[in-house]
Image (cartoon, rainbow, N blue to C red; front, side, top):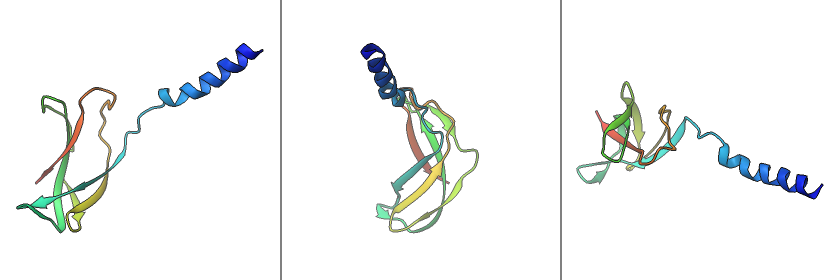
Length: 94
């Protein structure tokens, strides 16, 4: 019986390792214009690039993002495999 109890406990401990990576993420960042913290609404497009800087996902349209003293927060939903090595989320002002 102890074998089964240990196996049950180990299966629960390993479950988080098999959990799916969420598709939507909250991205918090800083944004500067001419080296100074930006303020106001800016049209920004988010991209996911690999280590070679090839774009593997890009938002189809830009998103108006409110920036306050250089800081912003938004939710993006890139449909990529985050478990692949070398994925980076970047932003481009339109």
